[in-house]
Structure formats: C-alpha cells, structure tokens
Image (cartoon, one colour):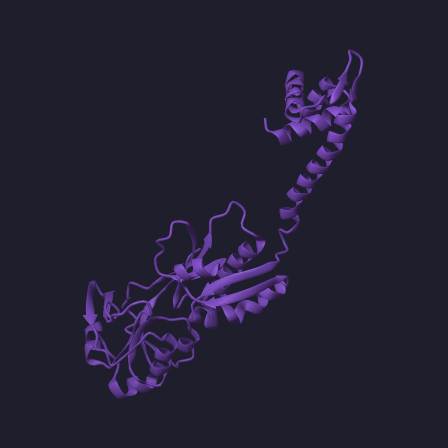
Length: 311
C-alpha cells in the first residue's frame, strides 16, 4: 500500500470520525485502516489522531497533514479529468515527417479538414520519410515508405502502393502499345532511383506476374532520376515508359497517362506506414492526426487504382 493510498485512507478516517466507519466506506477491514494510519504516522514522525474508546480526534499536526493531503488528492483527481476533457479537443505543436510526394498529393489537399476539426493544433511538416531524421528532428509522426527495422517505434499500416507501368498517349502513338512485359525491353524506359541508394539496381529490374507466367525484365536507362516529380513530368511529356507506385490516380482517370499491360501485375510496391513512438496514452493531437491520415488515404484513391488500403 503506497503513501498516496495511505493519505486517502487518512482523509476518509478524518471525515468519518472512526476507523470502523472509514473501513465500511472503503470496503476494507478496520485492521487494514488501523495499520495504514500507524504506518503513515511512523513515516511522518507524528501522531495524527487522539484516540479514546469513545472519540477519534485530530491532533494539531494531524489537522495540518489533513489540509495538505486534501490538496494533493484534489490535484490528482483534477489530473485524472484532463484526458477526458481533451478527448474531443487536441492542441499543441505536431511535427510530422513526410516525403514530398505524399505531402503534395495526399495530405495537403485534405489538410483543411484537419485544421477545421482541430484548430488548436499547429503543424510543422518536414520533408523526410527517414527514421533517422525522425529521431534527429524529434518528429511526433513519420510517414514511411518501405519496411521498418526500428522496434522502438509503432508502425500503423496505411496502404501498399501498387506498382504499374505507365506512359503518355503521345509516347504510345509514336512507339506503340506493348503486348507482353518482355516487349518493354525494346522501349524507351525511365527509371526511378532511390534517393538513399548509390546504385540503380534493383530499380531497373521489373518483376511481373500474370497469365500463369512470371518473370523479371532488366530495362535500359534512358533516363534515371531520384526526383519522383521530375520523372513524372518527363513521362507526361512523352519521354518514355516508367514503372512506379502512383500518387496521382487522377492522371489515369483523366487520360494523361495510360496504364500498360493492365492484365499483368507488378509485385514489390512499397508499404506506406505512419510511425510514432510507443506510449501508454499518446496525446490527442497524435491520435487525431492518425485518424486524419487514414481518412486522407481513403479519400485520395477510393477505387484503389494505385493504393491498396490497409484497414
């Protein structure tokens, strides 16, 4: 029985005027009450009550302890009400690490809804999906593409990007539509290289599955860049064929890009997760942003043309 619990029993005894009555109110035995008071008196080095067979009365020292004990218990009770009062209201600064493509195409268009819902939250977004950067910058949340090796973090799966092979109609009008993945070897190919890698491989090796067949093609390097947005602009201009997990399904629905070999699948698309630190009770601003991120992913690609949502 810790000291805080003993203070609670002490206050109950002072209010009840007897050990037996306090025991009934606390649903414990009178001997347990008596033991708690004796232990508290030993710890404080004082006598809290004048005890007679007919009466239990506070000593001057006991009255002083009662005043402070009530104050402590009232403050703790007030702390217990804080999470409940903030359940629907979040506040404070939220630092979020997010790759630029996800920020630009998925989060920023949906962000006004979050800001209207939680006006007391100030958001600082950092252009990063790195776990190392998350620790260095002290980010509260981090959008991560790919596997997570840091066991100190929790990863909330959001979606898996579906790899597809795409080209602009202007390119296809000049070079024709491929009928089999192997025919891509003869096409002008644009390769997206990982910003964290010094080599192109394995980004130039495209695995495919379909028609009871699977294989891998190694494509040429007509254009290589780690700038995803630049690669997309080159493809839209008709520079060639590229394989990517799209952030922009509207480019497909509008016809600005065409998906090639639609009856084939291209495994290996990266997982998108939202990382945050382990906590028994995360601040409301963090749980609110996680809810928002799930909503934003769902609204971004409801038909799952480019994202397989993780529910």
